[in-house]
Length: 440
Image 1 (cartoon, rainbow, N blue to C red):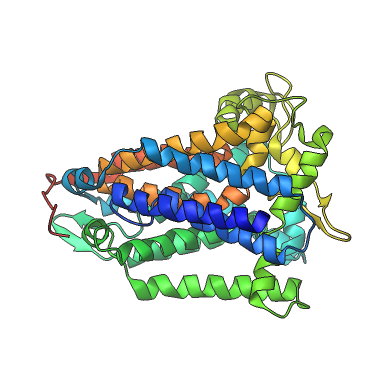
Image 2: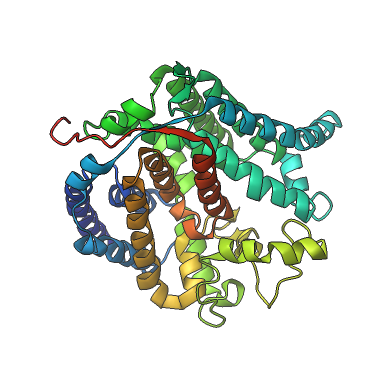
């Protein structure tokens, strides 16, 4: 029964992806990414899951995908409009170097702290646990500078690393900018005690760039404004893939196939969501709905910044909120037993946020809001080619929807804010839009 539903859902996803390609003008849009990623993981979970999951959980995910896909009916055709209205710009290299230098200076105290810990004998895995403890937790000011300032600016630098620069009429190589973003990502990974999230996000962004680069129509955007050096691009991606596979082999050395390794890494979120569905007293489902506060937690946290700054709260503490509210991470970061001997946490999917806000109504409300938001992001991309780069970054975040809600991530919201500021500060030369329809 479930197998048939998966086939039907995948077929609907294929039809929607084809329709979206015709409406948006290229294949790798948000409908295609969502359908490929979710169906791939759900099929992997169905055939290779190591954990028992009730059919109700799969039905929730599949019905949510159906709601997301049905929104394609209300999407107009942007294809011709896109090819007519995109304009292009140059970035001022001197201003970018000023931003890079400022980020480097801000990173020094964090890197010094990391150096002191690593030279004292702490191993990387222990540093990560230590930084999450009460003893090692950053102060609210220090943590906020890192999370709400350094991280989002680095994201903006990553997004624009391949964008063309103009200084006194001359064009400069982007290799130095790419090198800085690589070093910044490594530094952020180290000072957080490891973790693959920031590195994998960076790799996903560039893999999407490769796909867009080989798309006939989208190449109009990227070969004019975001020159791709495939060799430089391919090396870190290959390194990331190798490290991820090796990590999986070390953790699950008794598995004898790549598919089983992938299943071990990516298919425990249905079981973890099922755990919270069975235990609403721990998740807050149904009994204490937060009515949008969990889904849009990042906005709430930004609003709380001055109050928590005054109170001197820690970076991830629970005190000094204006009203009684429990952070989602304070629930999901706790290890839960989802198998006979398997403890895991964190990856609960975006539906955890939707259910915490609206219960079963979240199956309708959450996917609809996400589709509406992504379409608005695409309309934002139509206004300028550099906006298109942020849309590409937004697509990379959809792969995280099996882990978290995109709306709830402070780094995404602040990245968008700083991207706009970055664009305003560094964009220096604008040419008139060119009629390029029919030249693709």
